[in-house]
Image 1 (cartoon, helix red, strand yellow):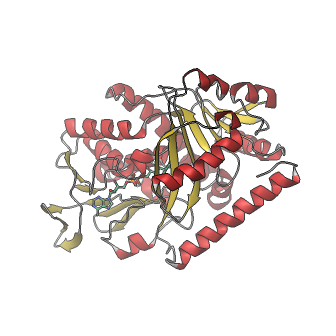
Image 2 (cartoon, protein in one colour):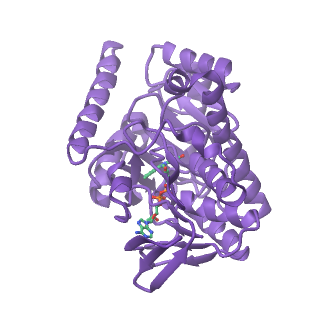
Image 3 (cartoon, protein in one colour):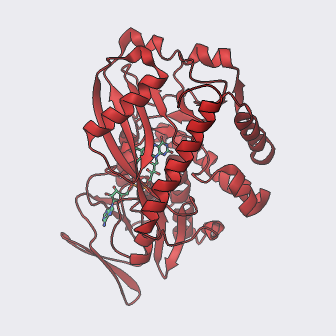
Length: 402
Ligand SMILES: Cc1cc2nc3c(=O)[nH]c(=O)nc-3n(C[C@H](O)[C@H](O)[C@H](O)COP(=O)(O)OP(=O)(O)OC[C@H]3O[C@@H](n4cnc5c(N)ncnc54)[C@H](O)[C@@H]3O)c2cc1C
């Protein structure tokens, strides 16, 4: 079997196969393991998909929606288990995640808290305004919800750890091996790379927003969308002026800020979504403005690192998981909520390939729908601006700036 793509989707599939005793698995990666979104992300490990819980409920009904959502919360537990089992050193901070309300309007929080409790069996704890402000030293937010089961980690270290665990169980991992051709040959697939060809009965495409250019309809079904991250200098005791919690934080706007304290007292800060993949200097400029809106006390702080990464989005905002041709499998389009769902996808695909499990059909409602490129990029950017404008307007009506 051949897995193409060394991000979390590909790595988890390969590890899942090895754990099920499948031999002759190889994984090829165009760059290095974790080169794509998986090694660059914010490190939030939480349940759910990019598609919101309410939409899932309407589209799938309570039972199916709950079962898919549960796949992601089980994936959070599986990630914890694998970190222990394989001794992966990835700076785990098991401190939960806070969803902080940017708006005075409490309905946003109440509605989601009730929905999660009633339909998904998930309890997110209410954090009243004063308690939230004790943990996050800003007047920006009003109340919050605390997801205790979630945690955060260093995603690139974790990706490398999963690759090592897979490799120790016999998976052949080939970095700097871009697949540049894929064609059916009898009952097999021929995967062409500059270093040689691979013949495999089954191939898994897991190339995220870093399009593989192997199957036109697979690439056509996703929009690569950028989001940005930067990391401050070590804050030392100044960290206490910003956060008194180790939890990771994101807010309730469409294009939310997301941030978390790192073990060496740096603050990792992410945000924005755009069709533009910006340079590190441009990312710093943009994100510093966002940072200072929340924490003006950090004025003048030095930014040591900044980068951008590409997420892959389908029009329906759900991952595309399953078999798309005889022996040809797919796991892509995890959007901005991918750490747990890629792990879930890896399990679903590994058990399909190793044991004939048909659970992947539960994703059939969310197939390869054209992303309508290049017009889709314009549409996406316009809808982002519209959503950001609505958030800014709501904030202004509540008497706050954007
Ligand atoms: C900046 C940023 C912050 C994020 N923050 C979070 C977060 O905090 N929590 C969360 O849950 N999600 C987050 N996400 C989303 C999450 O990172 C992704 O959904 C997830 O990592 C997608 O994994 P993937 O394996 O599908 O894709 P990727 O990790 O992008 O991997 C695809 C891989 O395929 C390789 N590839 C492409 N073409 C070929 C080819 N032809 N041959 C061989 N290899 C090829 C690429 O080099 C790449 O390594 C974030 C994403 C970004 C960009």
